[in-house]
Image (tube, rainbow, N blue to C red; front, side, top):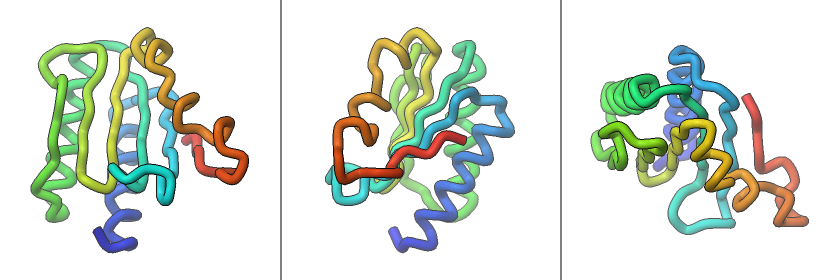
Length: 122
């Protein structure tokens, strides 16, 4: 994905999450740290229905700007929904599941001395 398209997609995803009242939205820069994506977005929803709606809205909005291949896992009422655009991975959690998996701790700057500023809280 071209850098401008990556930033446009990231802005669209975070704006959609804010519109859907997602809590504690975090963007982690994975460039040079992971081969599976350049950015990771993590957000919390309070109910299955909210999380499912957030995933559907993101998928539709990405399709509208030309990103057709978005893989979605767990959208049928689980504590964790994953959207994978290829360059951006979005994790939508219920609060308990987010705490359990601790992705911010796994990928955050605390583990990498040279990764200052790779986590952005919105």
